Length: 416
Image 1 (cartoon, one colour):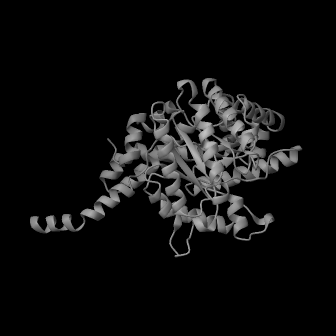
Image 2 (cartoon, one colour):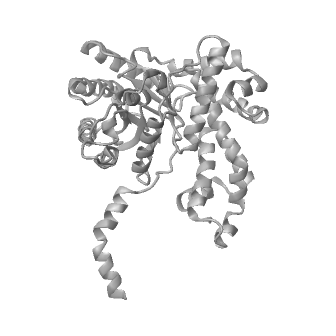
Image 3 (spheres, one colour):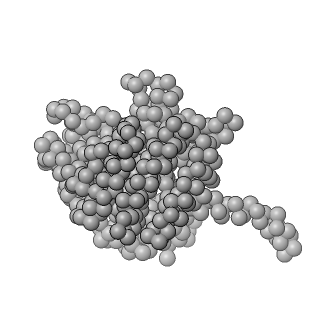
């Protein structure tokens, strides 16, 4: 039997190595609940603070108390009482978790000199943001695509931005990402990997961290290629460890399929299909998923703001239930419905997840729970802590597990 096992080891050696390299699992680091896109020409040192204050002002105007907040977001009254103060605290302390300075659709086409100047100014403004209070945990830029007409402009923008970001010996912040839009082939991901390698080499003395990037899935070719293969899976392989995320692009993808403007939405069946392909391709790879945006903005009179909040909150909740724990926000007041829906999702699941984890070790030893369940339960609670939906002390009290044990359980599914 020993020789048979050795034969199998040799037979499966390549497959084992490919599985280990291609499917390392989740990094288990904090994932932001959203990405806020701010056009580069509008980005300034006070932009993050202004987003928070504008979101708070809209909340104070239209839903300052739990009953109005419950109606505005679509929450149960008791849940609204728990969630409202958490949202208010979040908007004051960390209104944006992931900031993306946009040089693509939100920025438009400008002269090379103008875009270079905006890139340098945005980089210096970002350094000021990071030195102040309420700094986002994650930051980055969205360049133009690597399609031939925009390719040189994309490279020039990244170069100008990094030049200014690293001047006077400064280093790009931890968690800095470049977002590559409108990907149509794995070859573009290979090209972006090369681009990051070249920039990293150029900034080596001042940039010891690896430059990484994420891609936007907003073309049909990124889902299924002409050979019938799932292009997005090929993109993950082409990323060579530098690709960190797949972001769904609601409106470009819908328009490319010929869906009329009135029916373009995150809950369209075409969006569900694209995200399902993304989800299967990314499973086990460590690549994170982000849902797209809604362009129905909470602006205008009370009825318009509340209708937009209710729509956004429903879509955020829908994404969370489907395993997409991040999405895009395009407008300050969307932060209200983003955090409200997110916190409600985690707090509603808190009692049941905590109770099951309290009994998890005994149930697992009796064969009533599997490691995958333990990982999922712990993951729900860790995500709740990371985003501010629950405090670490609250979760420890409910589960009897400290955070170190919770995080270990999330990785292994084994209660220590």
